[in-house]
Image 1 (cartoon, helix red, strand yellow):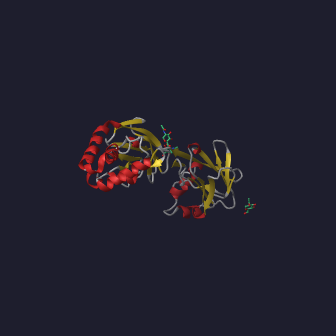
Image 2 (tube, protein in one colour; image 1 turned 120 degrees about the vertical axis):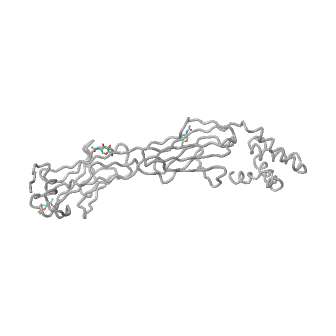
Image 3 (cartoon, helix red, strand yellow; image 1 turned 30 degrees about the vertical axis):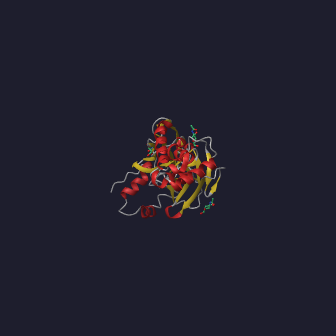
Amino acid sequence: MHCNLRPALLLRALLSCGEAGGGARLAKRYVGLYTGPYFDPSAPNNITTQLGTHAYLPCKVRQLSNKSVSWIRRRDAHILTVDRFTFIADERFQAFLVEATDTWTLQVKYVQARDAGVYECQVGTEPKMSHFVQLNVVVPKIEIVGESDIYVKAGTTVSLKCVITQALEEPAYIFWYHNDERVLNYDKSLVEIRMERVAPDTTVGNLIIYSPRREDSGNYSCSPSNLDSASVVLHVLSGEQPAAMQHGNSAARAAPTLGALLGAAAGAACGARLLSVHAAPRALLRLLVLVAFALVFPVLCHDEDVLVERK
Ligand SMILES: *[C@@H]1O[C@H](CO)[C@@H](O)[C@H](O)[C@H]1NC(C)=O
Ligand SMILES: *[C@@H]1O[C@H](CO)[C@@H](O)[C@H](O)[C@H]1NC(C)=O
Ligand SMILES: *[C@@H]1O[C@H](CO)[C@@H](O)[C@H](O)[C@H]1NC(C)=O
């Protein structure tokens, strides 16, 4: 059998010329050709990781014996680790040996964009031997589709769409915040939150507000488990208010015995939904609303109990 023994191809030649068998057996068999450590070319040297996750850079060294293994950052020639010891004031870097695979792995926790670059695995032979590993950091993009200010009429369903692209990992969840307060969707007739992976690297999160009120206006942000957030400002215009008021007044007319005051409170709660009665003290207003509920609303304003829960 013919073997090409040019140095760069030596190991490959050995592998291809050997009889069928595992790499470990071959290494053992040709141990005489490698009197010292050598890098196993089967280990990947181009690692791609998503921002914020942990990266693992392998350095597979056969016949290492008692030689030390260092990891050096190419960008600034900083020595990160020597064997198990970390030599940088950044606890995200750590090296460990998996003896079963002869691999010294550099772990980089919570990868940042500036960690991208070349890392050198250096074996303390004389002269030194080096193996280079490229680390790529993927930074997913996140945006809420459309303008940064969204205008809707009160009562008109609005759907906010948050799109995450170029992601290696799907977020475990997407939280939505309204003025920094978490939006919950326990009543799906008011608010619905959805998340869907539409492509291998794309996830879409939806926040649907079925009948927005003026007080639903404000800053909405979409915050995935593993990424920065994106935000928009929603402006709910009170265009629907007069019609809603009328509905409220008809409720009051249906129960004339309750009197004008109660009718006004009912109108405010059922129609304008507390908004238009700025003058009344909140506590009194709530009391009136509760009384109104007890007497009239179960029949006429079936969605108002939900409103109170939400408050
Ligand atoms: C390394 O992997 C990245 C992402 O898969 C790719 O874009 C790049 O071209 C690769 N680089 C080399 C040198 O193979
Ligand atoms: C490694 O082992 C050899 C003998 O096996 C010894 O001569 C040498 O001093 C050792 N080197 C280190 C760094 O311990
Ligand atoms: C909206 O809220 C987010 C998260 O708190 C914040 O980063 C952003 O600056 C806010 N946007 C506006 C326009 O206030």
